[in-house]
Length: 149
Image (tube, rainbow, N blue to C red):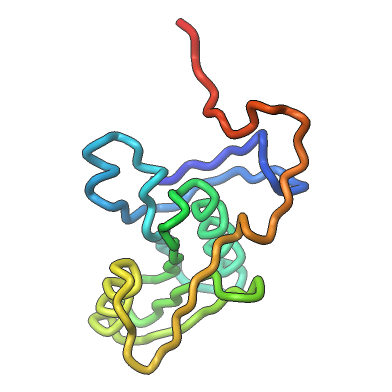
């Protein structure tokens, strides 16, 4: 699960929360750096309109955590007949498709996270950090914090 609490956020607001499941590339699991390899955030809900903001926020937050060459998608589903898939497109646009067939949704999710072409759907990803200007005077801003025992 992704648990996000940001204190040094590039956003002008704080983000706090979590997602139900994350899909992570195996290499990152093996190396115990799960957040760097998030492929998808998955939110399980009785899907209602207000849940979209939560799912999109989780996708954006995860996009900041992953390696630059990974494009995160978000999934909001009731695991039955509602499958909403989100991704960050060009021009700061959040794209979404809604599907009602579980097998088709899982096939599309699999293709999107493996960067395969999805038939009949143009999927062009962008990174949120390309649109956010981080203003920090701290020269060590790109260095991960260390805990001293």
